[in-house]
Image 1: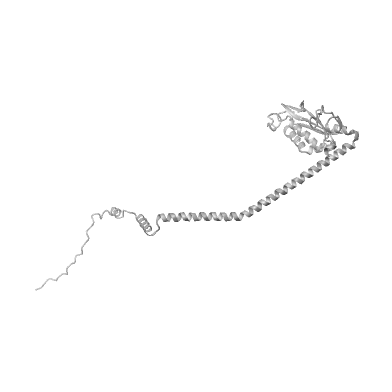
Image 2 (image 1 turned 90 degrees about the vertical axis):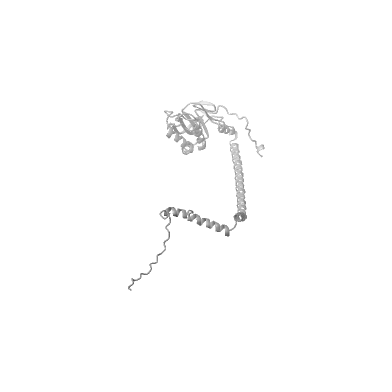
Length: 299
């Protein structure tokens, strides 16, 4: 009997059942990984530190102790530096004291020399007065302005500008006047002081003799000499070596100041040497408090 060839049996492989949510892979992933990997790793590390690290209270105490140690170290280093620098400061202080004492001694020596020179000048003045004999009173009258004098000297004329508002339009100084081309009392003060410094032996302004008690002031627009008002032009006469006096005043600071007034504000000036000038005596020379020193009083 002919039989049919037998076929090996076919083994069927079991298949896994398909998940109902297989088609929603994104939603499935979100549900399966609801905690981010980074957060999970951080949480695990914190648990490990809590298990094997130091307690938080102990760590705080250790930090405080470390801070105290550092503060003590800083204080110790500062104290050491202070001890090291203390000798240097003391040395500098001693040097400064020595310098002060040295300068004080030098000042005392200069003051002593000034006193000696004053005494020498006084002695020579007394010798000069004694050598004049009976004319000593005349010499004192000339020096004090009590007598009229004559001799060579300089003539200086100072006048306001032709236009008293000349200049750059700004008032000179703080006088409060707007007319910058007008001669002021301070200008005449500088003129007279410059002539004295240049070697003048006697000075007058507009015929009024100046003395050691004279004052040049202002009252409004007027210039006063010994409380007497003067009007421009102001004629200043000064006795002395004419050419030398002229050149000395011209080159002095006050002469340059007068030249600046002429250049900047139009003030008019004229300076010339003269062979013979006459100056009147001062109206009155009254001394109320000063007393002469006698030879007995100087010893």
